[in-house]
Image (cartoon, rainbow, N blue to C red; front, side):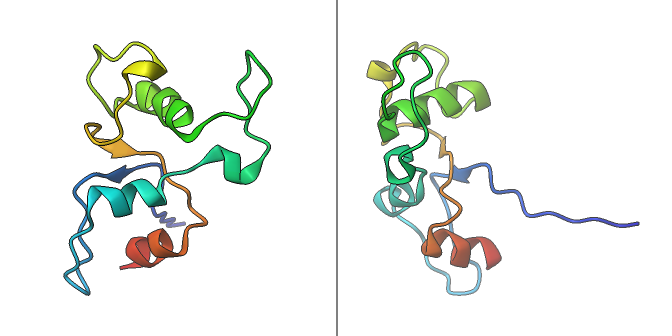
Length: 100
């Protein structure tokens, strides 16, 4: 058996669509990053409250190495200086980019 998959765990801050030759801006890519408030069920495990996008991206980015190790808390997180974002796979623009 042969299996294949499309990795969707991250999107680099330097993305390019090889079919259309479009170079995405950081702002466009940040718009594709997962925002847990949109889903209303991804909550901070410590507080039980909805988790802001920056905090969620910090938590995932820390686990996956998306930013410098000296960033120790969500207040250190800067979406404009990170290496990658954790994706919102239901975003239509991301789906188009991923399939390209």
